[in-house]
Length: 392
Image 1 (cartoon, helix red, strand yellow):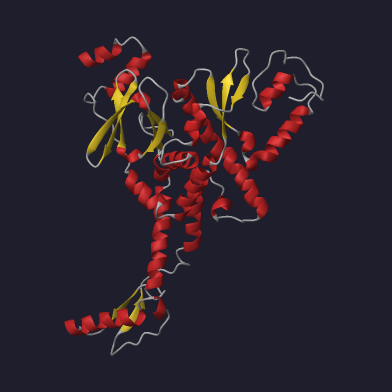
Image 2 (spheres, one colour):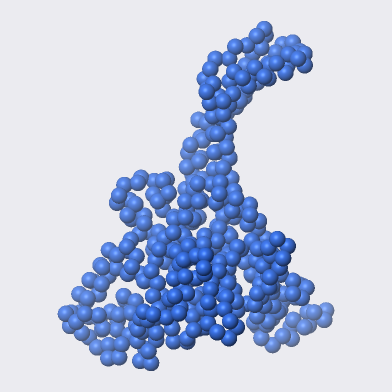
């Protein structure tokens, strides 16, 4: 009863929510993920070609987008900064990785586990010197009754390392039932992945066992142990393996072969596998043409590549950009911000060019309205209508 009264008397909504969430957790205890990341990564990424292709398409596309650093001026404009320690850190996050591999790792972990953790290394009162992507299955969130997260705990080979909340950037996908961890897309696609993996194993087993459905040998009389063992040995020798596929089976006495398996036609095997593969691609929002599941003409792949950047890559980059500007950039300067260069994405170059032409040809828009449409900041005096021949 005292606990209920205590919750009712909490003054702010924020503290009521966060304290209620951590009320039953022992002090300093980390919250462990509810899913087995190792199984998701092994059975999904390392054993399933469709999911592997989806994650590689996303992470490679994300890692190849160029980034720029800007400084906000007092008049509201932004000016690109060409040389700065942030750019050096971005190009070489740590001695073991370059920018491409570092971003690729972060994106891969996020789309496999639903979580990605980046560690910031540097002097406590100085700017960061190195950035590392940490494995999500080794990280645990340490909750806090006021700020929700008080820190993180990383476990390797029985050794635990504790991090402050400021030293770790936690990227996570939306999870409707978890306050600390994101939802893994592999968990959502688990049933389709299991069907695909089972299909591959079934086909391999079928090929290794003479490429015919399983069956049974029936006999009207009881066989001795010696006859039974000899029969099993002869069966393996005569029909098992790829080289013996479709070889005729010679039976003795009253032995009779009866098929017991269901044919792939009866199981609608091929269509079922296709549906499962498309379901995995749908969960990752990756166009089927990019992973070999649809017509692969040049125009189809071109449009599919554009859809990948528009619907998957750019949303991830928006998430990553906002997180870096909130967590990393303020350690260097408050007037700086990072942004990815959308004009540098080749797959979207035609759309960007069409947008620029459409904006420049519009004589009913002000200069600032045109600049906002193409992603630029406003400029002083830009709220007047300008002739069409004035470039933005």
